[in-house]
Amino acid sequence: MSRSYGEALREAERLLSSHGLEPDGADYVLTTRLNWTRSRLILHARDVMPAAVDDQLQRDLQQLIANVPPQYVVGRAPFFDDWFRVTPDVLIPRFETEELVSWVLSDQQAAKTGLDLGTGSGAIGITLAQNLPNTHMTLSDVSAAALRVARSNADALSANVEVVESDLFAELPQRFDFVVTNLPYISHDEESVMDVSTIDYEPHLALFADDHGLALFRRFFATVGDHVHPGGAAYLEFGYHQQPALERMLSVMLPAATAEFRRDMAGHPRMLKVQF
Image 1 (cartoon, rainbow, N blue to C red):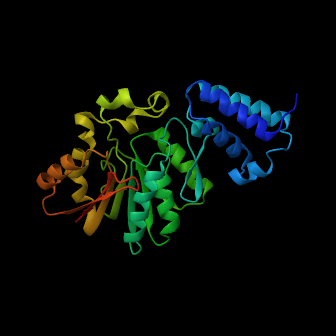
Image 2: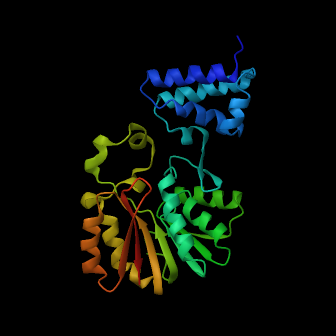
Image 3: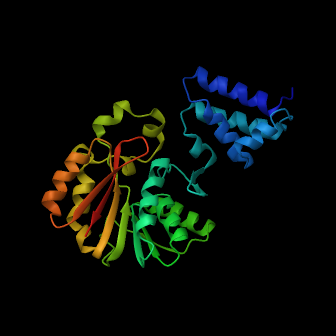
């Protein structure tokens, strides 16, 4: 029996809610598959949903019920003004990271070279390359699988970037005007309070770090000074409770650098700029 888009979506939302899941996952997969905005879905709410669309929605719902993140179900996630391909080899881009990118863009209009270290899907580095046309962006990651996703996104968005497989700076001997990174910073102690979908499907290599989530910061600070031009800067994300530990680490490891911490839109300390 045929049904309208609105009816199908309401039923899908009830199904997800009955499993204790966020109902807006149904809206996400449906509108993304159709390349529709939310307003267009409302406009067509009373129209009959084609059988093929309904069948796809049912398949997608089964994945959502299995806790697959909706972005992985459809293989796409928005970031800034573009859509990026995402797979379980890369983290799903978060809105909070757009704030970090905005900070870099406001500072680095004159930069000639930039590095997105630990690029994952490439969302950070590709966005910077598109908005800083005079900056040569290098995208690096320790994961070859992640770099394949980043390369596919760069090609799809016609972004002129260089892609390098590297464990932090190991294969990157040069210096850059700026470095931006979203290092793994979650402690394994926090697994019990994390979303099941994140634990089960997002790459642990990009999520977790030893030493209460601080291990990669320690490695990064030990060598970043050798890879940033004098007067350059490094930009990082971190966990909302990690600022005191990072302040202590910086005072010992990079005492000549200037550190600026910023809060995200929710008021949590989440971003750091290290000026050399």
